[in-house]
Amino acid sequence: MMMWGWGGMSIGLFFLLIVGLIVYLVIESTRTTKSESIPKEKTPLEILKRRYAMGEINKEEYDRIRNDLKA
Image (spheres, rainbow, N blue to C red):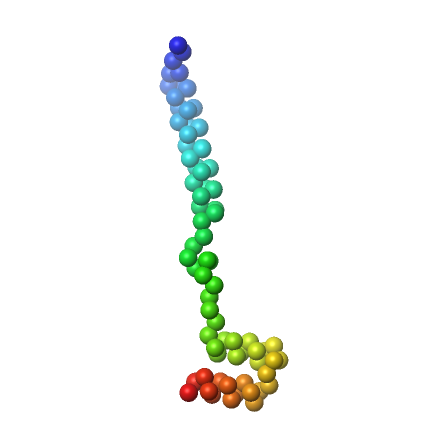
């Protein structure tokens, strides 16, 4: 039976470290954070501003709805 000695043992440890690093990087790259998995809900005022900016409603409708939301 052959003995590896210090050189063979250090190569084996180096190989294990490389494999461990690869496994860690794969796990970290596939993990999603809580903020990424839950879409941010828009407030009614943000939706109203977007509709006005897109031209879906006119200035009078925007003002009326904004006042209703603030009340």
